[in-house]
Amino acid sequence: MNLDNRVARGALIAALFLLPMVLQGFAEHGVCIADTCPLYIMMALGMNILVGYAGLPGLGYVAFYAAGAYLFALLASQHLPEHFVWIAAMFPAGLHTPWWATIPLAALMAGELRIFLGAPTLKLRVDYLFLVWNLFPTHYPTPAAPHQ
Image (tube, rainbow, N blue to C red; front, top):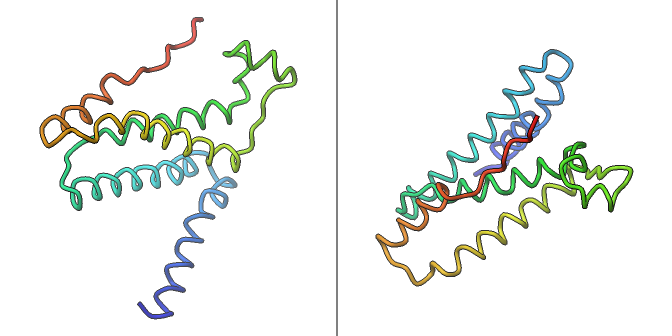
């Protein structure tokens, strides 16, 4: 890869990174699309690596992605103390975690969950490994909707 290709790729990545910020001035719908598309791209790349290179058809990695996204949503929300009394007691003014601190925490938690659930399956082979990693997302606990 020559220098021109690297510069072009770097400029494209920088432009795509700045796109949601530029779209904020126009419409909220454009920001939603610009934020959601990279998420689907990351999920497609994960599936490509898992199925294409490793040869393991499974959707278990989606559950870990969801766990990290859920923690990010909890920590970045201004309504977190409303749903957790113990957090409201510890932070009376509210817990306002910045996004740059929340992303590494969410990634770390998803990685720890992967290690915690993946370590016991290291001895499994072929069919049993396939069953464990495909059944895990179906039994992943979903948060209950708040009562209204």
